[in-house]
Image (cartoon, rainbow, N blue to C red):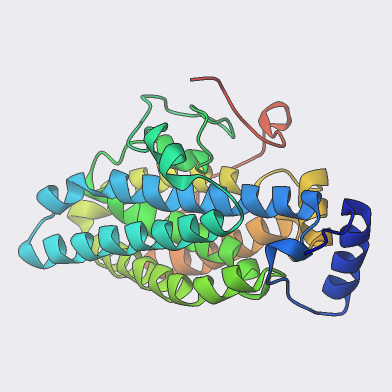
Length: 275
């Protein structure tokens, strides 16, 4: 099959996307589209897998047998999500086995605040470098991060790459169940005087960390993602939707939403610290 020059593929691709069409084949992609698609899918795949590994200790530490099963199911879901995404990455030419073997997705860092920086050279969202140290942390991770992920992944449900859209249908439904698990426990723990303050402390920790995952407002890279139909909204638009959602839930549970403000010097395009 004759391969069209990259410029022609880019023009055809942008025309198709502008008309509401979906990309289904590698041959349709320009080099730029493939690069940005791969980057976004890698971030999701690595985050799903690192998230699963972070939850694993709570299979043993869960408060009762019901929760042991629940946490086990959440871990299974997240590993499945990662596998779905890595299969998509195989479809765009990534050597997933080699990539998996060369990274430590169980890495956690002993830092109070990474800001928006990464602690290694994988592509996980940086909140997945923090350890989950208590049951309150686990619940607030569900409550905050699963909710934040849900808001971020909404755009993928109708993005320009059809295989990603198709894979996201099941993933999104399961992420909503994880979020519901956090909501149920947050409601329960916030209603009990003996546990309310500890839950608030966990909220104070995880809410700012989640607010940092969305990226910089007006990011040039985000504009490129929108150009290629891989995202639909600016980073800050997604962050505001998440914050409003959390505000509504917190008010119902009698929780105070922590303060958060971006640190401009740390809000970078592709945050990374060599490990």
